[in-house]
Length: 330
Image (cartoon, rainbow, N blue to C red; front, side, top):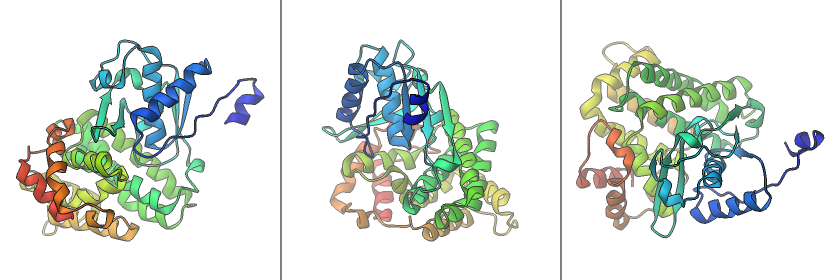
């Protein structure tokens, strides 16, 4: 990208210090880089983390506020700096979303901003940029997309359009993610995963996500665990609880995605398929494998209940129910 821009006499500066679950400090460091270079626009290159940092810098560059002032929906007054987002993973859909999440490490929480002024002016998904993505990241980001789609379908903010986008994404993921993980050079699988994550992104950006994300955000903020992997671990356990309220929805997904007969067309079949896919691609782990202990669960549950995404879940869980789900995933 630098070479291409240099050919047309566009000067380029590079900030390449973004890490997973980016922090406030990292955002301000990138913002200083942008301001000191007196640049005209921003190109975010990577997955969800660099794209989220790029969106944060874009908004902060034109609004005289702190990150904390931007938490919530549409808190900025001015459009962000011109922004191009180039996605290199098929999962987060951050490149088409108004949402961006930044870690407040001091308070061990995720700052969640959803701002129309953070939307990219141009977003690009190119299969060729994903061919060398490692299998474990392909798997985790793919399960993030599946979580987006499954949560969007049963969200209490869903409607016909979001459900149709979500179910198309679910179908594409079940038919392509395993191939993309096993053979990173499978162009067709990679391309279909781009369509899947984009459809899932459009679905959840309009309907919202739910309890999986509310819980997963706490694992990222407290333990710095990868977001996609956290979603993959929690997803079947949350689905089991949600099924008490949305059995018909899960049965519809099973019927349309797997063409199963009426006898097997139920929530258990769908959850088994989620578990099976997760096991095949290496994301079926336990939270204890990643350092989470039983004494941590109450804190994680308390934080979960304060996460804004929980209000789009099919039911509002109690403290005890959230702890129980964490225990099952432990």
